[in-house]
Length: 491
Image 1: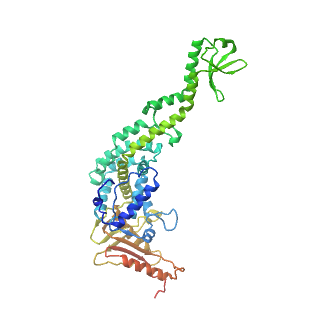
Image 2 (image 1 turned 90 degrees about the horizontal axis):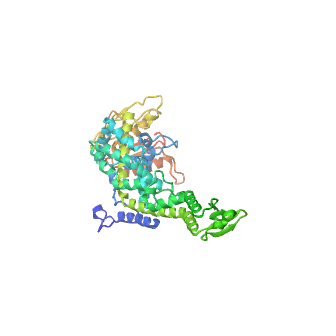
Image 3 (image 1 turned 180 degrees about the vertical axis):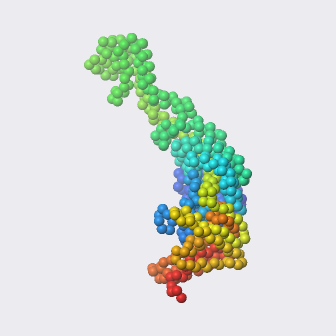
């Protein structure tokens, strides 16, 4: 990283962190044939920054993967209205790694609220996103030196949309949105370079040729004209030789066996100049070649190969020049992803009548008319019945939910966990009003089966899982235990 030490990144005194980072960088050096690609500075992320979600809780809450049906609805599929792959990936990471710091979701809530209240701003931000390529992938391929021509032309075509996006973001009153305007603004030098260098629709791969614009290189233009207009060149030579020799039947032709040649009928062969070299005798005439035709044949036949070689050389230089600005493209991609994710949250909030929650450190979960975000969307001919929830920091710390089968107990418990999680990622929530005191972990203990191979009954499996939860849980954790102990007698 060209630094004296790593003190600025607060990792110098963390040998485990340095070992992990060093192992990854070592792997990259071994697997990348050329040079180590553009790697952004180290970011040290402590687990204490994120809400703890063990695999069981992620599965039971159906955050990104359905429990049963392969194509079943999940929280992610319900709230993902992103236009770009970058936005969808960022939303997925927010869902699976919610932050504990309440200031982050508050800033996101402020941005989402402005987009909800200002429909013209929401449209101005959403419209340019629809035609953007996956800039994160393009930036990665640029940094790795493996970017393809069509990916660069996609980047070129995306630059006007980024300009519009930058102008729209600058109109926002919310810092989280307005601060992205400068990052999104395209580099004029990159815009000019890509605009001049690439054809309107270049070939998919460099091997196919026709990638660099004729106007970008005079030498390339000359070679292409020779390759593509060989017939015109031969016609000019034929007309000139007819005039010079006075032979009206003289023809300049080509075949695969003989190459390029001049053919003269027998009645005019006595007028052939001494510079013509006899190549082949026919019944009705003679075929000749000249040094000029020999040289031209060599040029025309190798023009394609030399064109491809020159084009590869120009494209490689272009790729290296763009690689120097890969970090800026990566930052632009991150800003686009964040805008897309926030716009998605605004759309889903408007569409499903969500409210803006209050997120604080109170240790209180207070939800008025809460609804399950996924279940309410799959109910076709029924209205979802909302329910209130109140859990305090000192009182009402535990709620025991009872009722008959199919009464909605599991749905109610899960919706509390999902509303809590949604609030902490910066999303509006399915409720009339909500106040969410940040939680540090979410545990769910839902259903179990016996572990015969391990010699454990269903009850023993459940007790082991609950014991693990109790070891890790703190006063700020949210626990959902659904029918705990059901694997034994009613007593």
